[in-house]
Amino acid sequence: MPYRAKLNDEMENALPRVRSFRDMLVLGIGGSALGARAIQRAFAPSQDGPNHEGRSLWIADNVCAEQFEAWLHRLVPVDTVVVCISKSGGTIETLAQYFLVRNWLKEALGDQWSKQMIVITDASKGYLRDEATLHNLTSLEVPDNLGGRYSALSAVGMLPAAFLDIDWNALLDGAFEVARPLTQETANFAEHPAFALACWASALEKFDYSQLIFFCYIPQWAAFGLWFAQLWAESLGKGGLGTMPVPATGVTDQHSVNQMFLDGPRNKGCLFLTSRNAPQGRAFGNDLPDQWACLRGKPFGSLLEAEALGTRMALASSGVPLVHMELDQSTPKAAGTLMMLLEAATMFTGWLMDINPLDQPAVELGKRLANARLGAGGYPKEQADLAAYLAAPKQEQRF
Image (cartoon, rainbow, N blue to C red):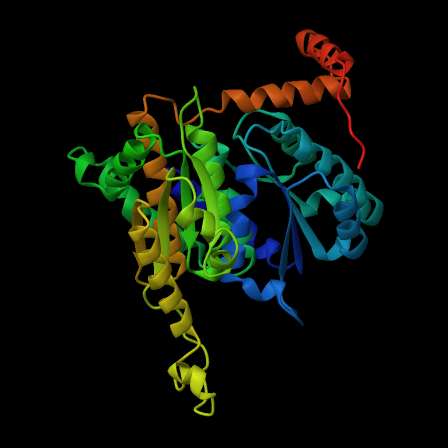
């Protein structure tokens, strides 16, 4: 993690001003959004609860005109700092949001709009880097060696976390403890937990296990399942290979999709996440009916622990290959440890599968076709393919 020293300097310069705002609006998609959302929901969940009065983080990670308009209608420009995130600086969905929000700020703030716009992008190239230079925007760097889905532990995730007063240094400390043994000259990859996890995952794929469940029994960490899904799928789904990540949340999904996990096709492995010292909450009274006497005097959290143990045993006894990842604490440092473990395991799994875990060639086709549909120049083949596709006869049935 050689970028950490520079990140510390960038954060030190940006944070005093950033924290003076009540709201942060993040413009980003995929790897530019999923990590920040997971960290916010894990460590600043009060934002999503009733009567919240502190700072709030809003992440515009889709093309939804209705929601976007609602946010711009309700957010107060003078109280809002906008963070536009794109590693390449050319993500069309994010740039479209940037153009709209830039005008929104200009209408309210005039020439001062640029003081409330921050970009996180490549250090030297791309449209957002050009915008930062042209308008003297505050900017932070996405390190050159980090693709978007591996960038949550850079400014991409750390600036939103710090805005919410989450201990972003602890996140990095946890990640560093996992990464450090892999960077030493005497590193023995075979002894690292990330490599052991990769060997297990690679073996599952070789034996035609096509799905990998990420079953999270730390409820406030559920959004890490969505972050992991992008990391795993975009890194390893190539050349007809890979396993499909399936995020699931305990105990919610015991009552929805767990029937398929337990009694459906035997094509699933499972990463099962728990925390040993989870908050227990308030205790049940001693006045419960006899049929629920087992709960008397126990804390609410004991139910989660029992449900997690029961589900884990049921999956194992049903023949689902399972790795249990148990954290000592559900803290920011533990989250950093988990994220780096999964990033390293993803890398190693790609190497064991003899594929490149850092590119995403198939995703680019959809982007080119979308650009052609919008009328962008430079896509003659895609324009021709679109014309043929749209001219093909269709079978339609109304409902």
